[in-house]
Amino acid sequence: MIQRKQTLYLLLALIVTTICLCLPIGTFVPTGMGVDMPVYNLWVVTPGGHDFSVWVLFLLLLLTCPITIAAIFLYKNRKVQAKLCLLNILLMVLWYTFYVFYALTLGDDLQATFHFEVIAFLPFVALLLYILARKGILADEALVRSMDRIR
Image (cartoon, rainbow, N blue to C red; front, side, top):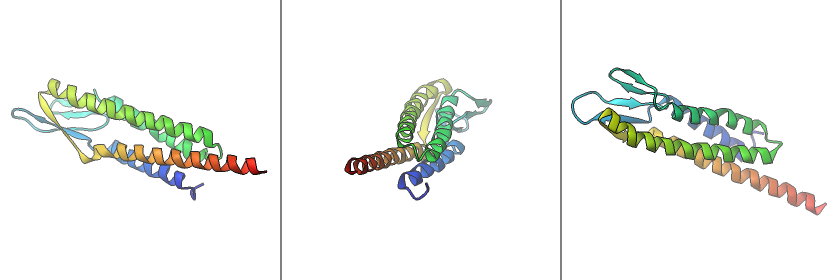
């Protein structure tokens, strides 16, 4: 199971996603006076407390974790494993869609400008790892099918 390269890709994607869940993904800097407001996947830390308006980002990343774990352990069923990788790719694209949406809209509500953090690129790394894993899974499936054809 672990010796397959796509399993390592999936494991690395899981680690990268977990790191992104825990660290700030951006900062709102007020246009006037005030303190910077860090943005996490679950909330924005405002001077008045926590604003949970970005919870969708947390949900999307959190959904990828059990799907990735399931994909790792479904190594005998390559078709399902490839579909789970495709689902994770879709969830990562949705994450970036919502990330850009919140960066553009919440800045007006908080009267602040948004600054991206380097951590926000980790889901892109996970996206690339899911693509590589899916490519490896489909290559394994093609190899198995070609061996069945020879018999």
